[in-house]
Length: 294
Image 1 (tube, one colour):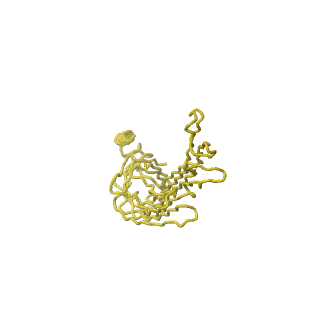
Image 2 (spheres, rainbow, N blue to C red):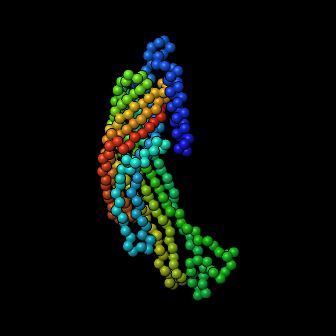
Image 3 (tube, rainbow, N blue to C red):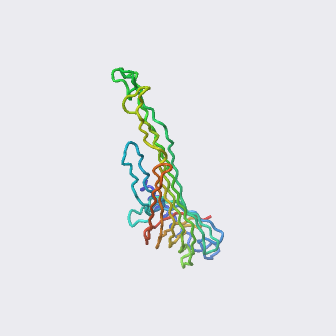
């Protein structure tokens, strides 16, 4: 997959450069052609590079039969900025820009993910022993042709991740009519939530109508972990217009600040464990982008 993306990018760049060389920098009437956006233009781009979704903290464990049920403390961290493992073949999100002036644009960048697995109750099998008591499991003395399997539960697992960036850019004039360098400011918001619940209820040992063993309840309710993050970034970059309606660009974040807060809820009605983290970074998040001008 990475190889295919790289080949497509190289092919697109080669095609654009070839078109730029054949078309030159003048229009049919001999006047200079300006490829850069103007007031009221829209641009849209796909970003490639390190992902922008913030990792969530761990969801607390279910109590089960552990008398030392522990809520382990772990703080959020800004994984969106790193001095390693930046990858140009990773699609990091989409960007939309609107030019309110020839040299000033406002933009919105974002991404969203939601996965949901609903819970399903388990079904435990029993058999009647020689004393007339119900015992978990199938009767080992009977034929397996009449056995009924134990149906395990399906654990509820819901994940929601969101990031939004609103910002502005100031574009500088360039002596190259296809190049549009710019600086800007981004305001960032990150959100991540994970909810888990195991509906398993198990009986152990034998029981009769008059003597029922207490069941083992794996979970007492939905467990959650939630992270919110806010920050800002200084931005610098340049767009190169292969055609009037097609461009590629590179963007770097000279300065980044992100503050994140996380909450872990072990069960409904219990106190949450809160943690927080602040991150300063410089030149640790770059993006390559391919976009169109409308």
